Length: 225
Image (tube, rainbow, N blue to C red):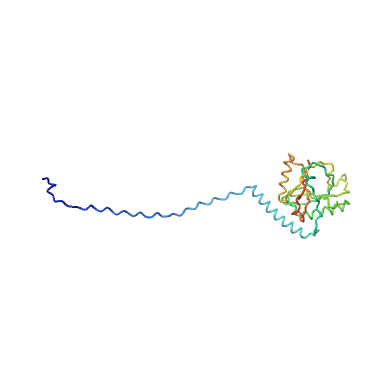
């Protein structure tokens, strides 16, 4: 009999397994907000456009105040323009005009009504006859412009610097259906149609503050080719 067989048999219980270490629940972390990106600095062109827009708005408000102090007829006498006669046409306009200074603010004619009145008064004082319901134009200047009122009886050879004649000059005409704030787009289209920058562009206003909202054709662009 081996020693193992002589040893008393004992039933030893297995050692208990260690208790598992509890795992802490995951801690929710708040997302870290991204740092705000600095706003891009406006370009000089954007700054100029914003300044022009603000100035034009202020000028429009000023013009409205000035115009409200001037009596206007209840019904305007603006000419009725047939687009078929004036849109994209090469023609001659044998008319004579008397011009007067008319300041602009980024193309906006803020004293247009007063300037037209001054031109008519000065023309009559020189013995010229202002054509009733005649053409009224401006030279589309950005700052220092002129208005032109149609007259008769003016001698174009008398060396009067305020008399301007289109007689014998070929022009290209284009109708504009755009309000004043968007009429510069029509100038760009006119240049594309001509294939070049014209020597001069006049704006013949065929609508006024009374009828502009209801008239389809607001103006006619007249370009010297």
